Amino acid sequence: MSSRLLQSTIVQIKEATDRRVGVIDGSGVVIASSDLSMMGTKIADEGGIVTAPGEKLAVINGRTFKPSGGAGMHQDYAVFVEGTDETAASLCIIASVAVAGANAYYEEKFDRTSLIKRIITDNILPGDIYVQARELHFLADAPRAVFFIRQVSGADVGLLDVLRRMFPDKQKDFIISINETDVALVKETAENVTEKELQRTAAAVEQKIQEELGLRTVIGIGTVAYRLHDLANKYKEAQTAIDVGKVFEPDKTIISYESLGIGRLIYQLPSTTCEMFLSEVFKKSPIDALDEEMFTIIMKFFENNLNISETSRKLFVHRNTLVYRLDKIKKLTGLDLREFDQAIVFKVALMVKRYLDSREA
Image 1 (cartoon, rainbow, N blue to C red):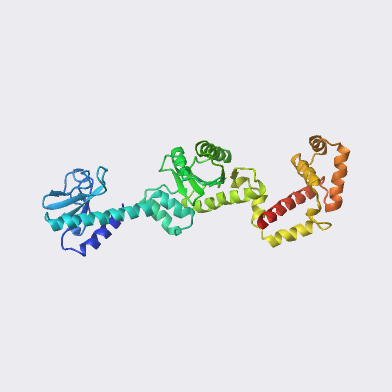
Image 2 (cartoon, rainbow, N blue to C red):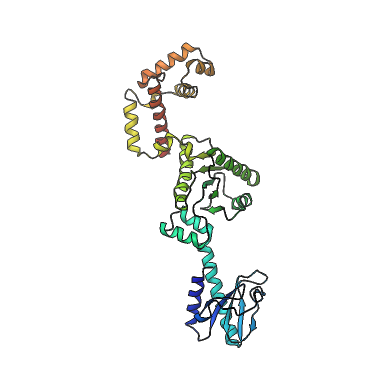
């Protein structure tokens, strides 16, 4: 715990008593005291009082001591009060409770996982990030990847335990519960980690969750952050990967932000702009004029890189039949899919239409 917070707690206790009150560390040295002249002095044997059972008081050299924490636990410090009478004992217990409460508050608010959570959720001032990182002896500038894991076939709190077993290094990997269904994994990576390596990590996570919990998940992967303050943007990227993937690649369960391509740009456009684009592209007739058979031909044509012979083979139709149907699509839409530039426009228009449909759903 921060020595500044310890001293602040002791100063508040001092206002309620004229007794000397303080805290010693594991070596018996005073690290906080109502009498500043005692700071840094050794008043107890190394480890003797601090590691004593937490429920017992110790009386040594005219002082009453109370180890921190509970019975049977390893202790980091002990509280002391000047005197050996009942008042000293009562005051020592009260002071121990106050210091333990301050310590619990500090660990809850200022441990590394909490710091990471406040960074990715934009719940900390930028200037405080590195101050708290220094206090926690936290390596600020290191490559870290953010994985956003969403449960889509139910919610199981056991997901956190599964992830903690997979990533037990609490100094480098941080597992953060966002809500009932979503969990963020912030993992330190190699300096030159590739997108494929991150996808392999996500695939291992997905498989483990499926094996142990029987849950289906979708995992979004942000680009690598090299500074702590970049984690918030990378977390948003991982969320965006899931949202965009749901629209344009609904069959995928692992989506990298880097691989979103033009879908990422379309997702950021306002609906009015998208509607104007569609009306400009399909001047002759709306895209809805195309029937299911035409859409099948179009998608297969795109899959085969606008190759007529390969597409006709995959569709089990004669080459001339495919040419006839492409001509029919051209008459309806005004776009010749055999021309590369026009095929690109049509492909983008299809994605825009899919995006608008998802907004209305």
